[in-house]
Length: 249
Image (tube, rainbow, N blue to C red; front, side, top):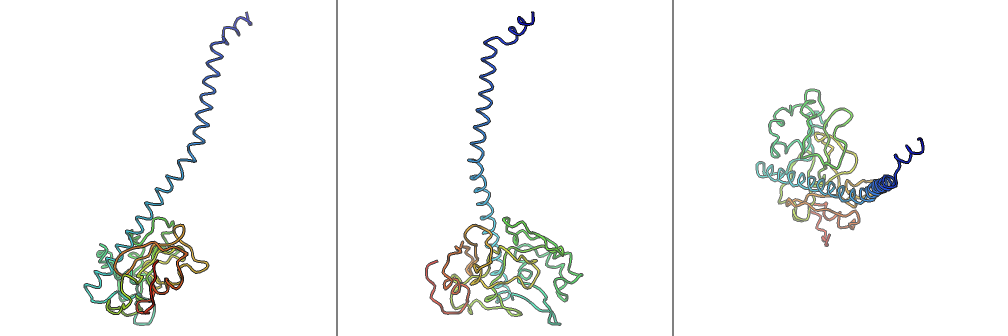
């Protein structure tokens, strides 16, 4: 009876079906293991492309805001403003807030006090999308202030004074106004949110994207510069009136 029962439970047809479905399941799993790694890189590339596009658009918005500021004041925004006591007061990114659609936030700021004064804590904790590169995970400083992923060209955005467009004798299309940063992120309200672009690929500097950074030029166009860019070219693009010859880049 037992032999007959086992025979009934394991007929050749059933065994064949069992082996077939086992092989089929194993094949599907193996195919999945092969396909998934092949699919992931294009997906990640697509995400990276979207982040790059967003960051480029952020820089374009910043460039437009700088020019709207210039239209209103006939000067570029000062890179940093000191308080009456000579302490760091406010940044160029704060100055252009009304021109990137953040005028209500701008009106909350007490400009008689420094950006990090307790009275100004709330507005400077606000994350500004136009100041954030989506590739960067850091968004808030240890003190709770919203960070910026971009830094201004300290050779163009002068401390305590605005520069006239006419003073950029090298031409706005050949002069960097702002750059992406890959490290040392500062709150957007911090007046120290400036850099010398000629040093942006120096040893120890990080790039937000593989191989280089996006930069904003004075005419509003945004370009990706390779980390292999000739240092002499970077220097020429960083100075507003250096008179250097700018080769292809």
